[in-house]
Image (cartoon, rainbow, N blue to C red; front, side):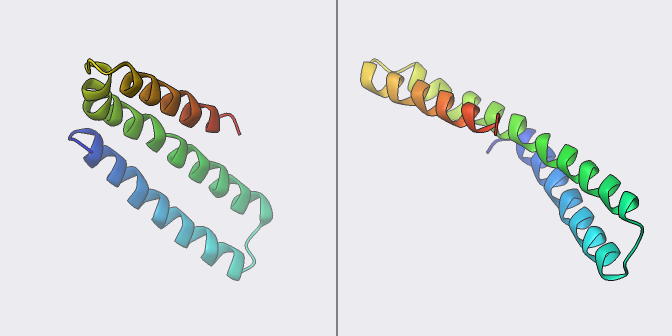
Length: 91
């Protein structure tokens, strides 16, 4: 990954890691379920923000290389890869 995407992704992932630790502690301490759920939903938001950063970095590096290639097979393979990966986000 390239900067600034790498730094932003790492920051979000580290924050998510802290959120997970906090959620685990809340469950262990039998905190109020709605409070735990609020933290789980916040975690989901943090994680969702990482994928676009990684995708953008990928498109700026590998994408530029593959799409700029004179090899049609290489271009097609890359495009199918992006379509497949983006399809995973709907799950």
